[in-house]
Image 1: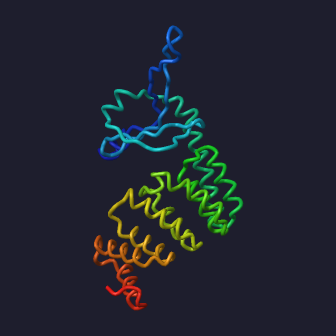
Image 2: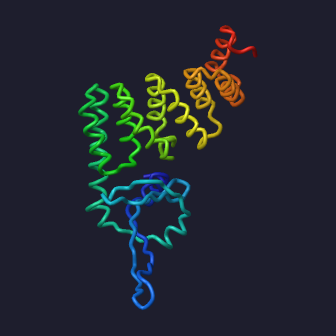
Image 3: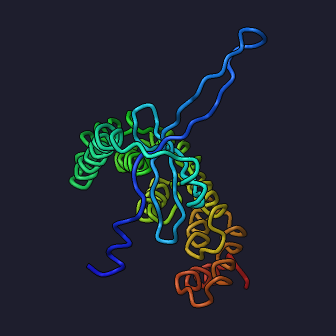
Length: 251
């Protein structure tokens, strides 16, 4: 085993707890209690620790936060038994449920997929893969109202726009446009732009959504922005030329 493999083995991963002193009641009836919170923690290669709270179903859920390793070691206590006996089996079951849902969706079995995605969301309502999957299932069935409910949930979740979910993020955006849900597509890509400023593909995608709404000024604005970030962006150039040919943009 080389040094690099050894280092990987030593990275922190598991469930940890923190304790907070709480004051309950007022005046003479006031008493102090200790509140225990549980977190799933994972160490990155650079040594920073990502922590995520456990929800009532004992699975990591909600926003992740990065903290320095020395602060983590000072404030967090390991809970190995709780992780092995309770949390890990629940995480594994959730992963399996989502995998089943994804297999059903790929085979076009949308009602079975919906059932499994909903089961996953009962355990973790903020699960990104399950939310995207359910939204895509509704879009594929043309159920715009239900898809819109999922969309509203997704745009509030910062994690939906992280790099690890790029594939699902792109697929969802394309399907919003396919269903002529252009207003939602604009809001969706605008939200992504708030979190990732310099992505020419996001500007190109928002331009396509604005084109569906016939807002040509906005289309041009975002295509120019895309070309500013990447002057060799062929699709953006082609789109601008198309607008010129149609007399929609003088240039």
